[in-house]
Image (cartoon, rainbow, N blue to C red; front, top):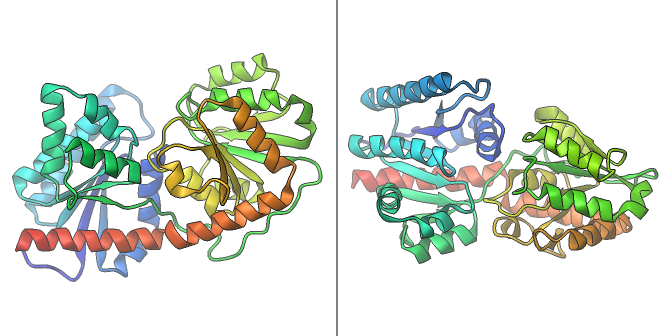
Length: 371
């Protein structure tokens, strides 16, 4: 195989219209394919799931069609390298099958891990399960991780080698197109936004408990929560805590509506227990928002406590309430953190920077096969 000017990269992952960080990242890459094209990279995408249908037979059909599409692309020599995106559980099993197809066909593949707990789970895996994952990782041209914690633990477990495992942070296209965001003090109420899954893992119960603690200050702020998950349970929790007047739920949002909501917001809050590397935090940074989050792996790669954000321990509603109130009461601090977050995003987490790093890795992997 000769190295072509336009390197053909096939991405395997969820439907780009699905909900979640991997889908959002792939969607951003697809929408910015020209950035990769400028770097000599041609992108193709094959989805292993469909976002608009939950029936099991449909899911199975989509998966096997994806296998057929990948085999067809390989047999017709329409791809130079495959980039596989995985999380845990079912996602890992599905993506491992594609990894073995690439390995047996002699096509180099990159295995990108998006779940921050991946190597923690590997550490406690036993017998054949551990061997299965280890072989998938070891046969890959590169293993891409999205936080320093993941890389360190991957090396400590022996699942990956130092020259094979690389850290590439997620990147998103600039929603403001280089403009400087202007955040002003809202005379009525400070606007606080959460974007993410309505789950314990994302810290929703802790967030609601923190808001309840701030009851004496309800007149100063409002909270808007957007995402999918167990909506009925979430809404019951709102009523049980007496928060229906201060917290509103807006469903899952994306595109221009998401950008509009972040433009109007003052504070972004994400009290997660676990993150790989939050795309939602990147979106908040890009919009110049002050951030309140947790001091966990992935988050600490994105923002620094006291510089772009206030970071608190997970599952600590009192610390979370104090951090939120500190930003509510200090518009100058909000502006300072928001400006710093925007600057850090522009320096480290743009889609262009991610495209540069991935393009380099793609070419290095293809060269390695040719030698």
